[in-house]
Image 1 (cartoon, rainbow, N blue to C red):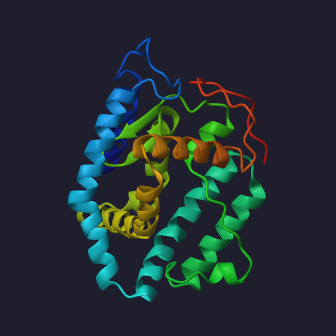
Image 2 (image 1 turned 90 degrees about the horizontal axis):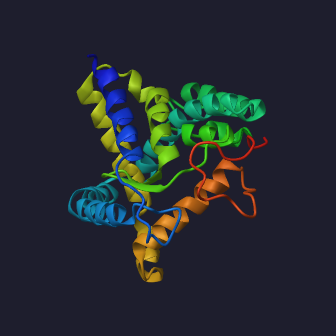
Length: 249
């Protein structure tokens, strides 16, 4: 089995495990979170893992990385995501947004030196971030139950399946050398985690139940993104496979 295929198989296997990881107990309180016992345990594991490994790496990264370099690294990975966003915008028939994302990718990859500099924003080309989970939502797939992915964090059944599409569309996925691939994936993770350090302090001060706060914020944000900032007033939280009509552009 090729290394690229094994990466995809791993993600798809996780998605299939999600759908059968638990039976729904009669006494659960939140219809969005029927697997709460598992989710809370995994949330704690992820928090401990983050505190032991990822957060220290992010703090060290921030301490030694000059701000212009940090910004360029963030720009580099954001530029790659513009390409995958363009594909998802096409799949959602948001062609003008897809064109803007493709334009950004072309400009920043060339004039912006492989995306290290965000030249496109200065030219008025906006970024419209979309992922495969949002595309599934556009086509009517409900989010399904909330699910905490080991290490990766909060998700849903729909977004966990969508993760396979995100991996396949990721330009980094085309890298055949595993050391280079995982090195760049790790750098992206640490760079993203460093950007969240300040927000984490606010979360710790504001949330009495950190798990519930993260869950609710995640689900609300995903609904907001799927519906392009205009979610329905009464979303059907229990929808699993087919939800409403496709979202409008």
